[in-house]
Amino acid sequence: MRILLIEDDPHIGDGLYHGLAKHGFAVDWLKTGKHGRDALSNAPYDAVVLDLGLPDIDGMDILAGWRQQRHDTPVLILTARDALPDRLAGLNGGADDYLCKPFALDEVTARLLALVRRSKGRAASLLEYGRLKLDTSAKSAELAGEPLALTQREYVLLEMLLSQPKHIHSRAQIEDKLYGWDQEVESNAVEVHIHNLRKKIGKDFIQTRRGLGYQIGTAP
Image (cartoon, rainbow, N blue to C red):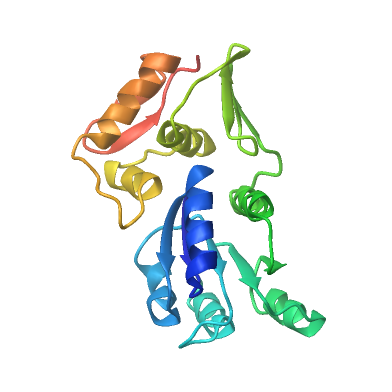
């Protein structure tokens, strides 16, 4: 799951960047409104964490621009503006959620997961496919009732595939979900993750669509 973080405070930004990464998110952290304003047009994000008090452009102006451009990516405002009129303005201005500083990292994580679920048309946190179950809130998986040991990127890839079982995901799309813009991606990284999931779940679980990408196959 790829998150865009727009936050100019170095301490808050660093805490969110590393904290969300530990929860399995790929995070792109931008510190100015100018760079953040154009980011949704340049990469596919599952959600945005947006500060309002940026040094160059007010976060509300960035949000308004996104909505005018018909970007529907879920946006969580994270700000020190805690007055009721500010909260109402944020939600009425296109934000999907509003959280005031100071905050708990676990709450930010839970709210982001809820936003992404709703944006994909899912109310529940459980994904099931045959004997495979994936809990997107706990970020855990089990196969035939037994816990399934996955790396962070294997988990993200599995959630991506199960969320859209009929969709064919290209190699580039998978890379965009698994890695942030500042992370190096080895040429065979996606193939390695696919191989590992097949080994752990079943060799026919993921099908290769030659020239197109990968798709969920036989249910385990």
